[in-house]
Length: 202
Image 1 (cartoon, one colour):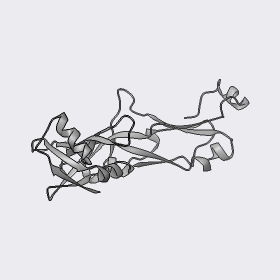
Image 2 (cartoon, rainbow, N blue to C red; image 1 turned 45 degrees about the horizontal axis):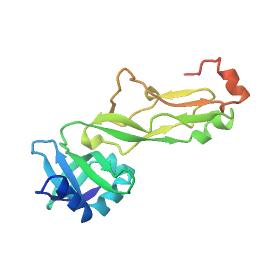
Image 3 (tube, one colour; image 1 turned 90 degrees about the horizontal axis):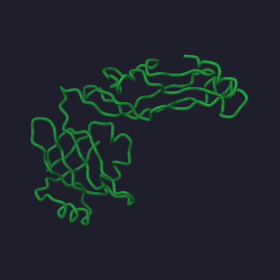
Image 4 (cartoon, one colour; image 1 turned 180 degrees about the vertical axis):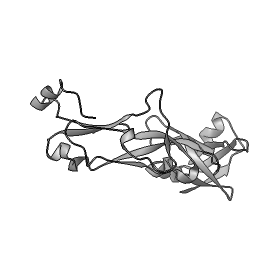
């Protein structure tokens, strides 16, 4: 994915306010062997780009003053109640260096699983994104988790799926194998009461 940026020489809060009034967004790019650089972006272009899931989990081609540079989105500041982007942070990407970022998780086929169709249970999802590390060339736009095989009272952990080639999960603390999904009887049902005393299948 591509977007256009322009070098910004004037800094400070008043300059940023003037930029925003003119339909521009202040930004910064850092990392790599170059010094951090202040940028400005077209608000409409970056607003629509940021509303696409893949923009947050892809190596982006930033056209900065006519020169293409690979970057990742690192942080976005939004207006508290207006649909307005206030500031964006980007990080330069080196093809030979691993990057750490978050990628979305897509859960598939839960409604087709035996847990739902045969056992009448509900499948609930865990995290909507995972922290991963990989070389830029291996960065996935999302990770798919197929839940079509789940049976009643079963669980799916990270260790039960195969991550894309070259991708490693970055755990939080000691949670090296997070729970991604579980099947259980609907809350308040008789089966739910009975299952409360029964360990879930792993």
